Image 1 (cartoon, helix red, strand yellow):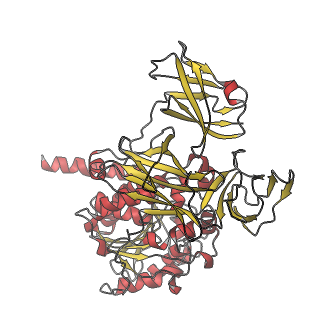
Image 2 (cartoon, one colour; image 1 turned 90 degrees about the horizontal axis):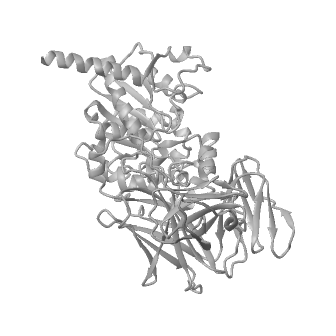
Length: 602
């Protein structure tokens, strides 16, 4: 009976692996056609040729978000050639194109079983680029493969997430995220998901073996030459550097510091002045990987006593305006003489014009700096509307020294969000009539399973000079946050961030991972892009009054107008006339101070 169960298990595993992976045998490195194209849209294992001087050790390569599996043995990447020369068996595993840490971790765990069985070895060494390093820790810790992995070399892995992923969770910035070629895996690589879920869940797990991780965190974006990392960095609009410090164009150096790991490079180390794609190339990383493979007792003198100290605080000296919103203007802070607009745009070579209330004319901006998808301009005139031949988002930075600070204060399973407005210069005073508001969207369950939810408006209460929002009352899940503060005529500031509500350990241990969840909409506007006609439909919505109160907000959560309509029997309401006076842009409609739906006015 036991043998029968074993055979059934083996057969099931074989079928599962056959369904999960396509397997491809590569020729020797010097015989590999540079135009080789393997499977692009299926999880794949590319087996390198076994070298004549095979030393019995298998190096398993795993890519990051984008399926760069073939990049690890093509395009002048020396990894395959170098490992073959040194006698290592190279295997290149492609999991998914952006599936995220738990999806890719489970697939990587499966591939480890396949590879160890094929080469009859007890364990493999993983060389992982970017999010592949997170998949490696998930495979080892969450999916039980720690004994089959002897060491992990993490090349530019954002263990604490990246601001790029935070931006991706804003629905009105989806176009910007798509330019990177990245997709669904961003949900589990936001700075707040990694801070609140990934790190506590994995770092405190009994299967965690941090000393197996060797970290190669690069910080040389400006010296990098490849187009991918440059394009990805562009999408931060120049915000990544001041927000998260030295980085490789995608992963901040501080984010690569896996707790308890071995750190090869210091911050701004001259040896690591290469960018996020360069770090995945053997000619940059192999010499350091090789030295650790050949001397397993080697230890660097680089230590980091705490990698979490600043992860609960985000600061901003900017606010964000969006091309879809005609109501957005560049407004100078009180006492500011100019502002700098760092703009990310969909068209690579976009042009920008402005219309000033004072000048009553349109002028073409001459960029101070321009790259593909990124432009920097200076603005000296107040109340200008920025226009372009491309969709864009502009980060407007002021020179008056006022910043907004968001602090995430853990409290049981309901964190408290604290906001402070700080005047750095002694002669500057923070205005008293300041409003702090936010728009939140539940984007996933705690285990990373996607959710479809409408936005929700939140307001912050002022106490002892600070502003607070208590998340108690929100259902469990992961929330994106578009935070805005404003004092009319004085200043505006924005932060893109997020938080997690609920018991992480209970959720990760009891919920099914990767089960799609959809929610039925109880509030809709048809069509969602409103021109002349707009029908509001309420389904399964409590209504104990003879009228319905509605309020319209802009995308920052600022109230624009409100009105009431009488109830009817069919729950369909023509609100066309109430929307006609709105400028073109993205808005939020709230019903009875509860449900919210997003719509676009054309």
